[in-house]
Image (cartoon, rainbow, N blue to C red):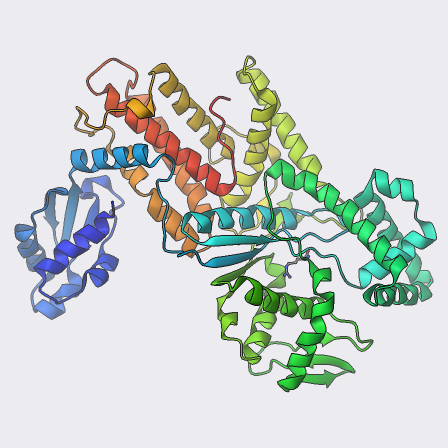
Amino acid sequence: MNFKKELAEILAGLLDGEKTAAELELLIEKPKNASHGDLAFPCFSLAKIKRKAPNLIAQELAEKIQSPTFEKVEVVGAYLNFFLNKKLVAEQLVSQIISQNGAFGTQEFGQDGNVTIDMSSPNIAKPFSMGHLRSTVIGNAIALIVEKCGYKPIKINHLGDWGTQFGKLITAYKLWGDEDKVKANPIKELLTLYVRFHEEAESNPSLEDDGRAWFKRLEDGDEEAQSLWQWFRDESLKEFARIYDLMNVEFDSFNGEAFYNDKMDRVVNLLEEKGLLVESDSAMVVELTEEELPPCLIKKSDGATLYATRDLAAALYRKENYDFVKSLYVVGHEQSLHFKQLIAVLKKMGYDWAEKMVHIPFGMMLKDGKKMSTRKGKVVLLEEVLNESIEMARHNIEEKNPSLANKDEVAKQVGVGAVIFHDLKNNRMNDIEFSLEEMLRFEGETGPYVQYTFARACSILRKGNWQAEAAQHTFNTSWEKEWKVVSFLMEFPNAIKRACENFDPSLIAKYVVDLAQVFNKYYAEVRILEESEEQPARLALVYSVTEVLKEGLRLLGIKAPEEM
Ligand code: ARG
C-alpha cells in the first residue's frame, strides 16, 4: 500500500538510470488540494540531466505512464499529478484493514532492537508533579509507538530515591515525625517534614550537618537509616501506583537512583583511569571545555556522589544489560544541559554508543500562564486532577447517555483519556495550559471528541448489523464520496512511522483528530445506513475507521469505549 514507492519505481523505469527509485520517492509530494490528485511529481530536478524544459519532460513522461494503480495522470506546468484508481485502491485498503484484525499500520523496521525509555521518574517523598505526568504520558506513548514499529520498548522508572535530601528527611522524621500520620498520608506528611526541615534550618544551621550525617549513614548501609529510607520509598511508591493504575501505565523496571549506589565506584574509577577526572574547588569534575559545556560534577568535596554520577552508572548498566539500539530520556527541557553533559562525558570515555542516547525534552504545564509548581505548599495533586476529570466525564455521561451500562469504567476512560490527549496533541516542546474544561470538550481537538466519534461509528455498525467475519470484500461502488476518508486511512502507517522517527506522539494525536473530522463530515453527508447497493462498502469503510481510530488512540495510551 505504499503508492509513493510504487510510483517512484514506475518513474525510475522510465528514466533509464538517471535517478534511483529511492531518490525519486523523496521528490514525490502529496498535494494539499485534492483537485491536484493524490500524488504529484515535480520535474524541475530532471531539467539539468535531460537538458530539457521541465514542462516538456512532464509531457513526455505523462504519455509513457501506464499503470492500473493510477486512473489518470495530468500535466500542470512542470508537475505531473497522479490520481489513484479509487476502486482498486479503496478495496485493497479496506480488505487489508479488515483482514489484519487490528494490525494495520504495524511495521518491522525496528527489527526487535531494544529501546530503553527513561520515563516518569518521580521523586520519592514528593508529590507527583505535572512534569512527571508529562514524562509518563509522553514516554508511554513513545513506548507503544516504537513497539508498533518493531522495536522492543523497555520502560524504566528512574526513581529519584537517593541523595542528600533523604538524610534531611530522616533527620526531620526523627525530630518531629509521627508514624501514623506518615502511614495515613505518606507524601503529604513527608513533604511537610521536608519543608519544616528547611524552615528550621534557616535559624539552626546545624540541622544541615545532621542531614548530611544521616545521608552518609544511609550510603554506608546503616540499618536504621536504610529501614527508614525503605519505608519512605515503599509508602511513596504505593501512592504513585494508584496514579499509574488510573493511567494504565506499567514499567519494566523501577531501578532508580538508589539502585546505582554500589555501581558508582566503578564509574569514578573508569573516569580516573581514562584521565578524565580533575579536581576543581576540592570537588571532582570532568572538564568539557572542548564541548563548550560547563564541567560535569562527579563527586562533591565530602565524597558524596551526584545525580550525574548516578546517571553515568545507569547508562553503563543499561548498555550492558539491554544492549539498546536507542536509549531515550523523557525528561523536561530544564534538564537539557544535564543530558548534554552526560552524553559528552560518555563520549569522552570512548563509548560510541552514547550516540544512541537521546534526550526527549518537553515544555511545562502552565496554569493561568504560570508554571504549576509543587513547592511552597502550592501542591497540585495529580491524583485529584485525574479524579476531577473522571468526575466531570461522569457528569457529561449522566447528561448525554444516562442509561449507559458501565458508566464508571467509561467515565474513567474518558476522564483519563482527556488528560492524556490534551498533553499529547501539541508538539511536546510547547508549554501547555492546563484546563479541565478545555480537555473534556466534546468538540474540537480533544480526546473525548475522538472517542465520541469512535463510539458513534460503532453504533452505526451495530445498527447496520455489521460483522467483520462475514464482510464482503468486493463492492459495488465507485468510492467517490468515500475517497477523502479512504485517502486519510491510507496515511495511517505513514503517520506512525513519522511519529516513531521523531519520537513525536502529537503526529498520531493530530492524525486521529483529522480522521475523526473527515469521518464526521462524511457521516453528515452520506446516509450510510440507507439500504442501497453501496451499503456494504460504506459499512466496511466505517469499520475501517473504527479500527484505525481505536488503534490510534491505543498508541497514545487511551482507551476507546464502544458506547459513551
Ligand atoms: N527524578 C528526576 C526529576 O524529577 C528525573 C529523572 C530523569 N531521569 C534521569 N535518568 N535523570 O527531576
